[in-house]
Length: 271
Image (tube, rainbow, N blue to C red; front, side, top):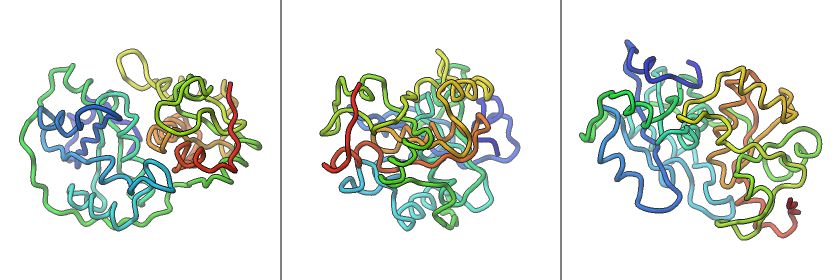
């Protein structure tokens, strides 16, 4: 199963996948309200903070969930072994990619992100529902370790010897502003690659060739690249983009800046 699936491809599937609604916002009303107002028929809402992350703390704002926690959430959503899953968010794929990454990390290969998300689906006049489904419990077995991860020392080393991509907005990368975490700036040597650069103006992902060209211009070489962001969520979309571009499975610094910046021994670079 390819990492991205179009709205037309999803609508035309003979085998109905498990649909995960992963809409999320950093501030404001909880995204479950958007889900209740309308979602893809049969989709189950998955809460990023509750289901796709551990409690914030020393590991960052969105640490990886324990295998037991993730397995319980996925089974409650009806995820089954050897059955396809499609995750979507409001539009750009930045949070749906977290679900994609975690399922791949857990050993579930048949998972894709909906290109353009809920915005693309509704823009085409496709059906939506306000009914909350009650899926039969799934039987997925979460076996972690199928996607590579970085700790802080490994991220620092990769920034020196390869390319460590910072998925945050340029102003946060430079340290001009820091609205969330206690220190501003970036990991020394990291290269800014805002996740918004993966998509075009209508929220659809660029082609594999266009993504590959972007990463080449950033100095990326397969096997010598990893990604981080503020808390390990949007960087998952960088990992997805690298795979779509044909550059393999890049490691994710799961704790990301929210983990790095709270350690006074970790240096910070600005500009």
